[in-house]
Amino acid sequence: MTNTPHQPAHGRLEHFSIAFFAIVMGLAGLTIAVEKAQHLWGWGTMPGLTLLAVTTLSYIGISLVYLIEFARHPKEVIAEFNHPIRMSFFPATSIGMILIAIASLETFPVAAFYLWAIGTVVQLVFTLVILSNWVHHEKFQIQHSNPAWFIPIVGTILVPVAGVPLGFMEISWFFFSIGLLFWIVLLTILMNRFFFHPMMPGKLLPTLFILIAPPAVAFISWIKLHNGVLDDAGRIFYYIALFTTLLLFAQMKYFVKVKFALPWWAYSFPMAAITISSMVMLEMVGGVFFASLAPLLLTLLLLLIVVLVFNTIRAMLRGEICVPE
Image (cartoon, rainbow, N blue to C red):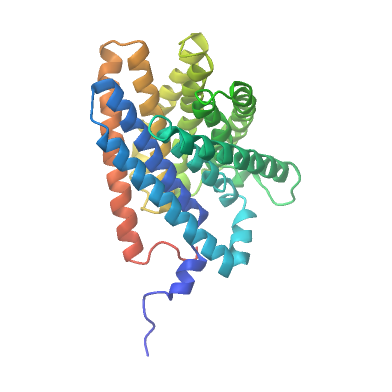
């Protein structure tokens, strides 16, 4: 008797990865970008509301599946949290809440407050636990370092985007300060790895795009923290993010060779972050450059999300996702 190519349902559930929450980050980033486009170019509210609903339902669905996995296969979830790479994806759960809060601020302010509050508390817990694990460990090696380590840091930098409009200025500064410090520390570690050690496995190459996220999100938060005023520090954050984007696009020949897998979603949120940042620059600076760059990046982001959704659904139908590595 020949073995069936399809895995049993319990096997697929057992290997449902925490990295699925990167999908929520990408969808939420697109939602916020579209909402920003509505303000800039007078679009109707329906596209943003539709994307917000899709993002929220995606978050709920992925959360329910992961909770079921935890109930049935707790050892697998614990093993993921102890994994030197996958551990960094756990804050994507709290980041997802904060991003949905940002997207809901104008339409559903009460829901946005509770989502932001819960997400911020969970983000702090994850940041403390993960940084403590990095300090007190016996397993991490230089080859384990990768841009996914920025995810906990991006979450802290993101807090002011909703925190300031909600009136929590000091809490926002607290989280921004943490993120700014450890962004610089982790960037130094990663540059050491890139320059003096073997490159990451091909499957993880898409995570290089996460390098865009800290300065792009820092720019948006900085503007919020300074009451919408663009100063020299804000420009520095933005142009670091823009240069990092150009640097990665200059290496596109390496990315196009990578076979589709869940880490491809690492392209999405950073691209959304630089797109939103460029829209903010268009709003505050104007000019032909930003008037051309912002819609170009938004178009690329839309195409990217379509490609990611299509390939994810196809991979799931083929049984290529939620399988042992």
